[in-house]
Length: 267
Image (cartoon, rainbow, N blue to C red; front, side, top):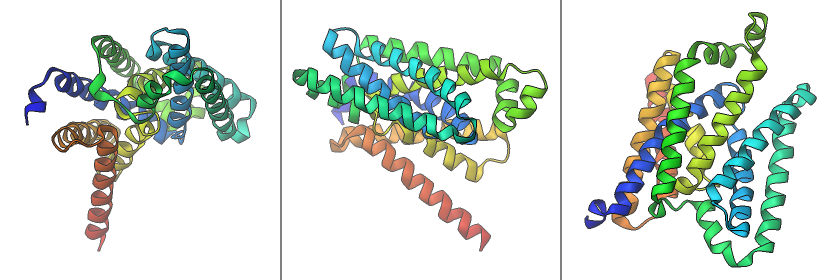
């Protein structure tokens, strides 16, 4: 239990707590808009940016963030170009992100071990710079959601009605994409790019089972994510397990329990 009192573990708990707020909130908007795969796409593009950051010796998370934001703009442009095939934009950008990442990996074989920590998560190596980035992202996301809550609600459930009512749909679509990019870039060092979409989508899937209103769903999605993140970190720390994988498996376990409980109540 000594690990819990250590400084690096305290940083991990703080980083996990902050991401446990922002990731599920943004994930909920994506799930309700049937854009769950955007998380995976931006995560893969972020890894390409991280790899480039190591290659040019510039703050990897910062470069990954720029890549993710650029990808969010590209997705929005392609969604407009292929209105009847919106998922095509996600597939195109994801393919480009994987291709760029593979190129950067081959160009800098010496840093592949460092990049792998971003693939699978390395929350125990969070530094003060990482916590600062995560803290800033948390403030930006929460402020945006609070200020534009009514607009985001309308846009999420009926984009056409939002446009008819004069809501600047394009602006809010870009805003959601950028906020998602920020959250994913801040999250990949905690749960890893290969698992970050789970933190975006599984808490939302759990919350939709038990919540009865949109506000309840937002509160529940955060509580579920925080429970999984905090418990996952404690379990991983005590039993020397992979933190990202432990968090995701806990989320899946919680989802299964809720589904079984719902089925039992129906019977």
